[in-house]
Length: 352
Image 1: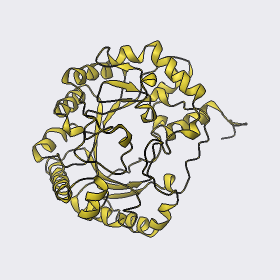
Image 2 (image 1 turned 135 degrees about the vertical axis):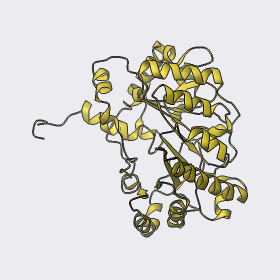
Image 3 (image 1 turned 30 degrees about the vertical axis):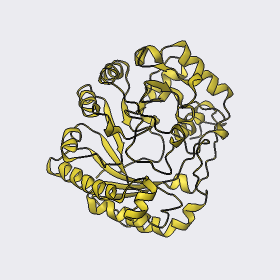
Image 4 (image 1 turned 45 degrees about the vertical axis):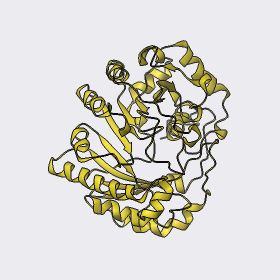
């Protein structure tokens, strides 16, 4: 299996987009994160959008198909179905994934896998670039606590992931399957067991990452909690072989969220679509209508992206928002680090 890189920015591979941006052109995002559903079948205690209370909303088939056309026409390269709730609660997701594949757009999904029945896996896996499933503990009781659900969900998710891995192998599919754990107060001593379970289920990789706190959420994790998991991290890495990778997000754990950038400059390259149709710069502003670029129930994605309102909001965030008060380890963090090096070059750049 080729090496995976999930602990940083891949914007380096989109230099044409960066060059246009540096010239002052309007550039469409390379990647879009989409919430097909704001409802969820679980209530994770560490959910980053817990403050929104998961009021149910679902993107319509019409909006999905409109997004496919706009993404294809304007060079959006990929999207991730994740966000506010469980994507598979939206019945239009399989069709959206298939249509996007036909247009050459890469797609991925984050899911708790409880609803990932065998027929759903067979329908979506041939068209996905990757799928990542969340398992916060290998112990059913701890799983139920962390995921805010019943123990039965653990067994259902595990079996569904196992079947998905079997479907991939039997059909020689290219989709990459992974399991993700977020290090928390209740599972820091259970990392190795989740990694071992991941390998047993037949997925391609396991990863553990640091918790990211939204200022409006109450749940929090000490910055140095990872130090109590160091031996487990090393044991996880020893599980890696030709068919499986255990990926520890060392860049997050060993470095505090120090922002060498003074402005959020990565907003043009990644954006967020919520289940109510609103398009937002990032998850810091999901509950702030003044930071909404526009809504897909009234305009197309392209029209909203090319609007003065979107430009004005991005300019306001860039010039007025204190990035040190944003969410830790936010989605734009690695992209901002990369772009800030371009915008603020050091002396003597020709001495490479």
